[in-house]
Length: 306
Image (cartoon, rainbow, N blue to C red; front, top):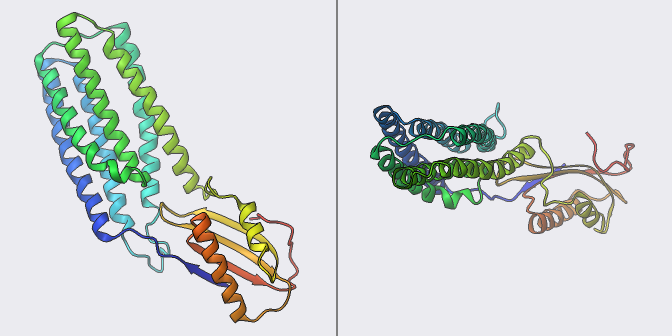
């Protein structure tokens, strides 16, 4: 059985930077949460207390992301042959699921605020929402780059972005209530944020679920890969194919290949090298595991099978 993989990992310095950025974001959100709780109690503002609750959910999601980043760096062992490579995907799934819960809470709040608008009792609410916008805004900028190609970081980024937007809604609502007595804007903005969160969060939840369920990545066509391997000279048939994504960096291909003739092992190694290069450069598959066969009695017609 031939097996090979292209190394495609992130450097330790990059992971350390990710961890540092998450720690800074955790510290900022703890400060924001505490200040909003104190401010909410002093001013009697339910809007501010609910915003504090969202910030606290951010703290928890950021801690989950941070722990997953640390676990992802741990080496494989005899009991954990893949190490903790799935930790970040699991964190993304948990955080995406909690994003949906936060979205539902925001929708309920928006309806309640629309039916019974709350007056902002104090300038303190406006100032604290400004602090939350600045704190979360800085955290959003810290995590933005890594969120583009990492589900775990994207889930943390979305939590912070949503919370920043919620604080903007509190601020705008506060200013319009204070100076213009317009009470419905806060509810409308909150509902818009919740809908945006469902739109973004659902996509992340779906993608992380696909990885956890070992689904074939949507960018890969199994039929196309099988046809390209079958086009190689001594290959008779490709069957029992499995393609799955282990984490953000690794896509695995496992297959049985039936050969026309009883080839030498050295010949198989050359064919394997061709297959590896082809699937890596064309499909991004960096772990290939091929079982060579000749005249073996098993079902050759089944491409995909348990």
